[in-house]
Length: 339
Image (cartoon, rainbow, N blue to C red):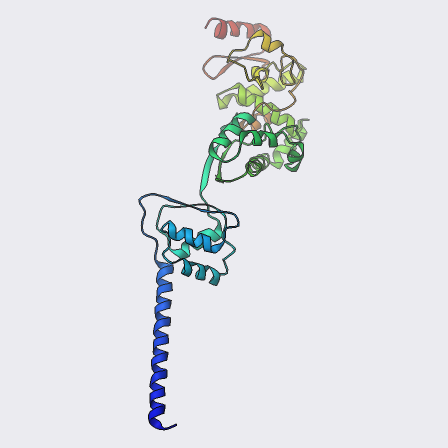
């Protein structure tokens, strides 16, 4: 081959090489620009869903449709490069601030889904808890209560009871939207087990109680007073009565489970025999009547020392305490019958 032809070939190859380098440089620039450029600020928060089993192509297309990315093909290419094509976590994602495609992928891989706040106040019973859960999450009230009475499920949670009443620990939780009833209950009971420390378990044994017995007593204490400072003293009354083999005669145990209760206890309520009515049964009821918090649990375990056997409401969330039945009757006349 003569020199002019070699020279021409060299020029052609150089042009091809330069063109290829230029195209490659442009492609690299476009990819880098794509990965580092956040989507434009939106007037409102964007909620983006990834369904279980949804493929990468569908996710990328939906991202473009929502205005979160501009090039689905580049997003798929990047996800495959990061070996993340099948690692994107299903769930509901919330975007209020601009994020780059790379940041979006990181969020999907980490599963940083939108969380919903669920606050369970102290002293609610299972049915009240189930209604709160249903209002916030996709957990049906009936399904929730069914699990709370399921013996096999209860055994998996290390709870020695016929139901989960008392063990749905009152706290503030954060769950993804599609959290199941089972997962919500498991978290609540796990929190109970964390709060009920080994020290408390040792104290329970030393007192001659079971954990179930303490939780039951704590639930009664929880329902008896709206003043947290009174709980150890309320607890002392119940412990004193148990020690003397006296009935607890706690009003909240009378109305537990009565769906028709209108807010006023009548003689027929006191005389009704149920496994919970402590006006009719000796000792503790068969189980908790609500879900107590840590203060009531601590009060049940560490009652104040007193000789009180009675108390009556002063109608201001506090109570008057008495050592004798005669003193108690006077207090009833003063605080209840004269009001």
